[in-house]
Amino acid sequence: MNKLTIYFTSDTHGYLYPTNFCDQQPHPMGLLSMRFPKDENTLIIDGGDTVQGSPLTYFCHVTGQQAPVAAALNDRGYDYVTLGNHDFNYGSENLSRYLRALHAKCLCANVRDEQGRLPLFPSIVHTLGNGLRVGLVGIVTDWVNRWEKKENLVGLTVSDPLAAAREAIKDLKCDILVGIYHGGIERDLQTGRLLSDTDENIACRLCEELPFDLLLTGHQHIALAGGQWQGVHIVQTPCNAAAYVKVTMDENKRFSSELCPVPDHADLTEEESALFARLNDWLDTPVGHLSRAIWPEDHLKMALEGSPIAAFFNLVQLDASGADISCAALANSVRGFDSAVTVRDVVASYVYSNTLCVLDVTGDILKKALEQCASYFAVDGQGQVAISDHFLAPKEAHYNYDYFDGVTYDINLNRPVGQRIEKLLFRGAPVAPDQHFSLCMCDYRATGAGDFDFYRACPHIRDIQTDISELILDYLRAHDTVQIPEKSSYRVILP
Image (cartoon, rainbow, N blue to C red; front, side):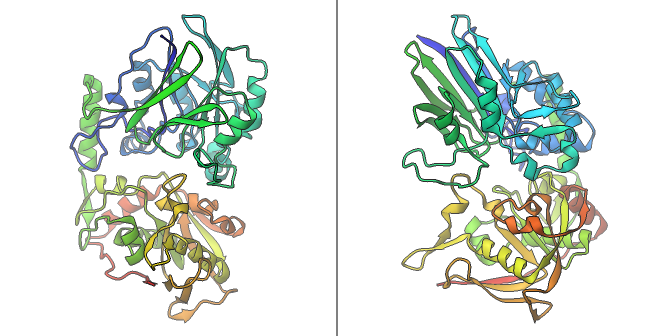
């Protein structure tokens, strides 16, 4: 007989309905498609990144209404949640409304709200019906401080998660200890190989230094059940409510876990159905025309040959910023654009709540950025080109490959990583190392995220505080037909 059952979700990103929003066909996903049988020995827990990341949450944000995420969690009987880094994206007021609408308690030991707007608890002991005392502590990666807009963190302090968790559990009187960590795993759990040498993800360190029995992780979107590190059971879910994890513990305190699929349908209330209908009407609103349809292809093929979708994003960014050069990345999953563009095309192709930054960069910095992008390609001993493991593990991160416009250049894959950029030209002239340029990019990249740390020291020329999705929509409405470039701004020289 099981002494404890936990149902765990994380990184649902506002995907409530059984849809990926790219079309109106049902897909096996969505929080509203999940149901969790519950008794007095069951806990239902979410690991954060719940209120931002989907066309639904964007629609609710731009129309000034609260996304129905809290209601969905309440209806499913959630007991505890923690915060994810993206939960701060729409500001503290939006986050406060979400948390105050929740029946579940929010455990987040390393977030402190000096103004008392957020109902946060560092840790708790939950006593089950069978008498088992379950200690729980929640924490979020402190890289929130690097990524988030300063105005969204006014009055909030996000501290070191390891230190905060250690403090929060030191006086807990419990039979087992469960960590809810919105952060990922920095080592290969089979070999111990270090996958990331930053402190963005520290799940293994948490297992090594704190007395956890079970660690519920997130942030990386890895589908993981049955993981083990230093005797601690570790799980993680994929993103966008594509699966959840069921964890059980027997009378001998042995854990087992399984990834559970999600059906492609949900029993919607009248209110949920009405919102879904309004959302789809909005998504299918025409907004403009392109000279041709532009659809995504294989990630490697786009990186090798150029992406007209990224070129379109750069066109918008250059127009909005007046910068010399622009760089843009593509999400791991992108819908693409029909020639007759709808809102759905835009918000399912640019899925982040990013704004724009214009930096003053030198030719030397520009070349470093291009070399970092060129490290996306791995070449084996037979001259076969693939995507570097660094962009695939521990987290799939195609969004850290940037496409540049405003300069032309060659990427020579016959040369070693760090020495691949050749014939770098600006307006037909060679770029000098000390030459200065204005470079437009999303605010996420301007923080140095994705191994672009050298951007952090670059002077800010200006910030454009309009969501890039909104800039794309405005650009389409302002032009009868947007001409999509036929040629890429760079060339890859293959082995």
